[in-house]
Length: 145
Image (cartoon, rainbow, N blue to C red; front, side, top):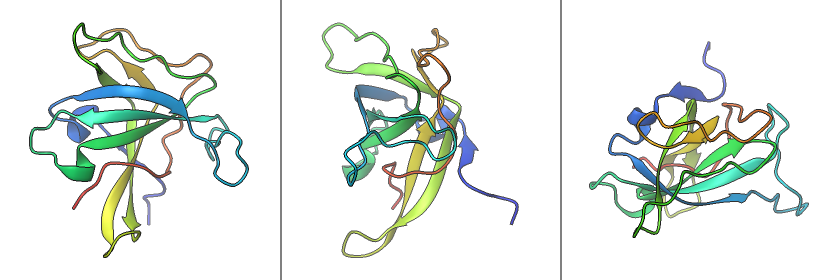
């Protein structure tokens, strides 16, 4: 099969109504208590907590994490006055479908990755210094079903 690893996808395909970032934090390996590293780039992984602006999104699909591999913590766009979150776009996204069998019945879920974070509408890129993410696999993503 020619498809290996994550599939490239446009931001607007994943978040057609936009997205809002709540926070960003380092991902820690559960066993070693050290920063989790991206298997392709070798860079530390950061999780951006995101609210999907889609009015039809419900439950687990409303709040997702997008992983960014970067040497330093990615900088989120500025807050919108009066709102607790920040409108955001992700650059060079990729998606990895997987089977989540942690619930009562298995379901298809998606792991989301990006190479950078920026302000919506073509604002300047907010990539972390010294190269951002790989587009490969991982966990903790947008639900489907």
